[in-house]
Length: 413
View (tube, rainbow, N blue to C red):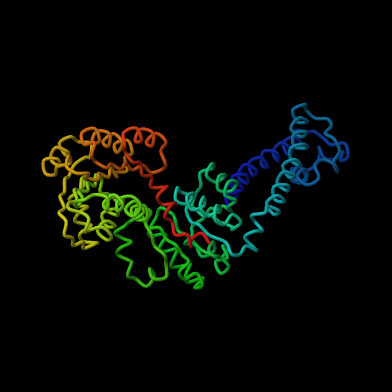
């Protein structure tokens, strides 16, 4: 658990403290200081004195009596050992008792019908927020290779999760998690390869989890490459940007397209994972509503080639590519020379990962083309973007909110 690291640190300082207290007692006895119940100690061998110094950790000085004679500093060192050694022993014993009695230590031994989540990032928090609304009593175990101390406390106290530090690809840890009793496993970490490796091992150890292992893939190319594999057929694989894009298209864009009398122009300003997912979803459900799509991105040419290779999109709308920064005026000069944004009601999606650039560019575009329907992407819900956007008729879209709104509800039961 998260306490494992704390335990290792406490063991480290205790070894140093134990060595220091032993030396205090040993040097005190070597200095010629005696003890009231063992008058022969000053004349004893150094091995005998070392034995008595070690005994301080067990019974303190109860069987030796009090320090007498010798130099003042020798008595001081021996008194330090008298008080320090038993206190150190008592603290170690108390910590061991607390750890043995800790609820988390025993809960894992009898836990069942639980949800296991790997990863402690934003996606995990979104999932746990929803889970606690739909199923507040479900037991949750969160595993990650490391935890921020504040995040660890949030998971334990706000979401009542058992927190374990470890690598989910290690068989020993997987067996401790009682996979054969688990309800569902979610792999929401940052490393796609590790996630697929963990999924393979989990299904080998617990075949009953077939169809109940949910894997988040950051890499769209990898996700598309493995989607026809046997492993993929046993998992539920998703991408948060894909999920968010699907929600945006179904709840906002299609409704807008149906309200316009002509086929629409769409500007995708930012063509990373989110922009690519929006275009993929548009092609799947609204291709007939679109007249032209303009793609703007710093790496637009390469990313469009990747999309064409992976998705093999064949459409009856025109697509124009503009390579450059979405905030560069020359890019918009080229775009507006090719496409008339002042006509009808074009849709502009500012969807890069740079929230500040998205909002600033959206305000500029809206000022020049007030007829445009403009969406600004932020990662989390931004009160600032909502307030400023609302004043200017700009719609704010939060990736986190879209994911939470469109996460499959069967994952929460």
